[in-house]
Amino acid sequence: MNVVQAAQGYMAKMVGESAGMKVLLLDPDTTSTVSSVCTQSFLLAKEVYLVDRIGNKNRDKMAHLKCVCFCRPTQESIAHIIDELKAPKYGEYYLYFSNVLKKLQVEKLAEADEHELVREVQECFADYLAINSDLFALDMDLPTWPLYAGTLADWDARALQRTVDGLASACLALKKRPVIRYAASSPHAKRLAHELGYLMQQEKPLFEARTMTPATVLIVDRRSDPVTPLLNQWTYQAMVHEVLGIHHGLVDLSLVDGIRDDLKTVVLAAHDDQFYATNMYANFGDLGVAIKAYLDEYQRRTPNKAALESIADMKKFVDEYPEVRRLAGNVSKHVALTSELSRIVDDERLLDVSEVEQNVACADTSAPALLRSDEALAESVAAKLRDPLVSGESKFKLAVLFALHNPRSPHLASFKQLLADAAVSPMKLDLMDRVVRYATIAGPASTATGTSATTGLAQFGKTVMRGLKGVENVYTQHVPPLHSVLETLVRGKLKESAYPFLEGTGASNGFPEGVRVNDVIVFMCGGTTFEEARFVHQLSASVPGVRVVLGGNTVHNSQSFLKQIYDAFAQRVAS
Image (cartoon, rainbow, N blue to C red; front, top):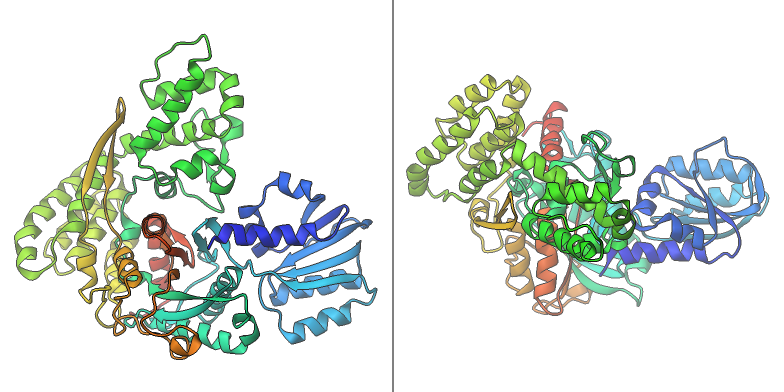
């Protein structure tokens, strides 16, 4: 199961079936889909010489070109295609849609094809953003896609439909017939499960085709684990997203002092970058060692014998020797990224902050232990809140983690005062309480073993390694609760009371009870994280025959997660 290869297969089919020069027309949704899996060189090799938006009315007429059109079957995109067919600019049209076309939409397209230029209409199920081979998202970022309506238990109708469409598309792209299970404690997960089941009934021919094989689709809720998105990360992909942000595979380095023009925006895509594919799950220390080893190998072939003792040395070496940039290719961007990450870690004292985060997140939340540990934890948090070298954002996240650890702690009032003294806005102080309300999911938040969700959050530790002189890497060994849920599922011991089957998708759907299913698609309502993606990848690699794919509405870092909660309450959502 590989969501990148599935999307690439669809793209190869779309642009490869018609010979000759062609133009590729996309809508805003499919633009991000295509850019995440295709390079310009791939499109040029398939004779695609122009890529444009279907909504652009200022395109020149070029009747000698064939047109491949790939869009989501939305009302807006269908309207643009109809306008295009009524006043065609190209000689032939090949129409592909990223999800299921309704019968009425097909009829409207047929009526619009007055010049009889349409040669093909097909559904290619790539209605998702392929990020890693085993990670996809639906690109449902705020403020475009608010998730909640009325209460935190209610889906926004538009967001629900988009989520159902995207999850169904991923299943169809992977040729999987869903055996649906969902977190019983989550109204969101339950509603999504039922809507996906309803769609399967409506589109039976698609889901019951002979090429489809069963896979467990496990639907869980971000609200059951608000801690994971708030923690600092120390593996490469997760760290870049937390500290710098990754959007559609791009990282913006334009504000970095002295950055070269060609590195102001860099691409991170494992399918097109072997160094990144090899090191995306590496901890920060091992990443530095990998870059140093590559540059040492090149340095042995050059007259320059400068010592590469630190990240700063490597950055200077790359900048001074253009030959290295040409030979190293992608490595130069990783030197730039690593250098900026190292600077921010030092400037914002993230190592010290992360250590306190670990202590808070791993603290025992049973009543007796809570009384014993609360004072010591509160003092360590307060020390960081008083530290002028710690950023306001880090201070706020620490206070939020403590509030989640013990929402009734008498220390929270003093923490808010310390945050106010550090110029943290009243809006953020109010957000502390909202995060706790967000995390209060209806019913007991159960893990796979039936214990409280906070017990699952307590699997936390620390490893310290020295990979380069001047860089000490602290790796949080935080294990997201999702990992224990998936391990229990793989062993066939996931409690049906906590994660029931959707009626009609168990034994009656060719999946007898008690038979182990090795293929799992897990979807996180409210967005997933790169930390969870790393554990999913490790689980698939460590258990023979097991293949797990992770999806979510979006991939969060701490900022996007807190914004999601803030916006939910800003829309006057009640808890």
